Image (cartoon, rainbow, N blue to C red; front, side, top):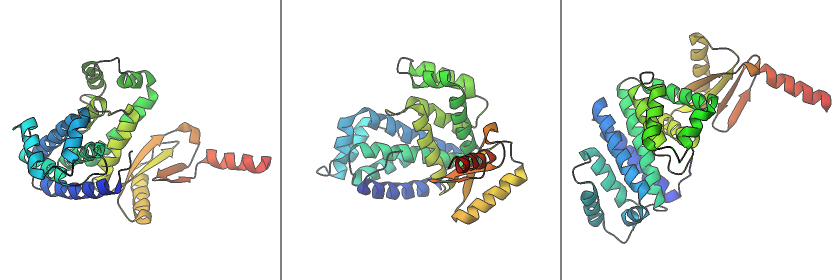
Length: 275
């Protein structure tokens, strides 16, 4: 995930607070429309270097930038998105490209608010992880979604054939954007970025757990409680079943890894004997 410049980070923080305030007053359906509007803004910003420069040019006043927004979008954006966009162009950015990065963050967070209002946020996080595992297990499917030769319509049709009816509405909305708005990245990197934004929308930490066998619900709750206590913030756990670990579990969160698997202990013992 791209690291923004210091000025842009401050602007994103301001906009995330404004987003949270707006979303708190919206229904689930209106939050989803808010997200759709923000993705529309992202698509336009991503397609035009000149527009990004015009909207982040500090020599232009906010009124001129607002007029440009109005001329471009007319009444195609809702009031919440228009207000957030107007606020965004009044702020300072480290580079023109980073206003588009900001709207990607905001759009995904807005969809996360919609999922949360439908009591599906936890489910969406798990399903995004599940889709990442599908990509790993099906390299041909991933290759088609990454291919520049395949039309966007063809990719969307393929995506829907795989996930429609199986995932929550917000998950499908996000995956549709992952496929259509990769913004120069491969699908894996785009999906990882979206997953990160979904988790940070509620200031949560994501832990990636590998286990030889599925954890019981009780074991999962105990693990979440232990990690939440250790990290001092709410933790969401994604569990990958990997028979190669033999037994035990490994946990990866942020830049830290706790590897308590039997395979790791055997590897350590082997290295000790060789040494």
